[in-house]
Length: 296
Image (tube, rainbow, N blue to C red; front, top):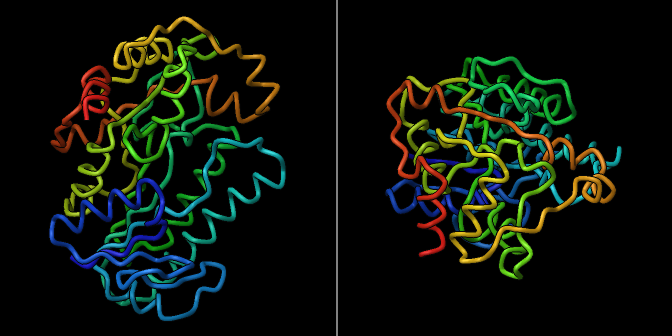
């Protein structure tokens, strides 16, 4: 297959490019700064140029473009930047796909933040969406991706917390434990819907080639855990204690609204569609996933 990846230089994009190349697919990465022969220059704010021809020749387009949600306060300026980095890239790709005249597969990133947060309820692809900033952002992101239909089979990659080497959440989660300062965050009761990087890659490739997969797809493991359980298992995997609680008030002070939506409140998200369609997880349990990651 000819696969085009936008956002291919990030944590997930690099891993997906490597995995697809290993499977014998031809991958072209859309990037602002070209540094190799398998890359094509693009600027989503200017939806014209040779990259449109690259998209029109693709069998599948994967959209992973977007600035990181975490790490900085959600000021009004930051919120607008998060929105623009997602919606403008997605709109440019959807427009190019719709005009291509070919039937493509369009896998467009989203997040489990679309469901909002809850300590009591579990969410599947059939669940209603939430009402906070992340939910609003994901809804607009997904609506923009759906502009590629019916020219494409559109898959909305509602990704949870991806655990793998080389980036993502794992280095940040592990850092305090390496200094014997790890433990739960806030109450510890909030659910963490995680997935091993290998399973994220396999599910993305499976969805790309499985004609039955369409619309929202939860990329999470079937066994979410609480933050306290995550801390205990992470401590065990690193042979470190899990005793020091990060207080909620400190996170609220440092990060404001982002602390509530992305860290202190949780989402128990289940991969109902993937399981119903026969996808098999290599790492269904967090204990096994962490053991494999830290043994590598």
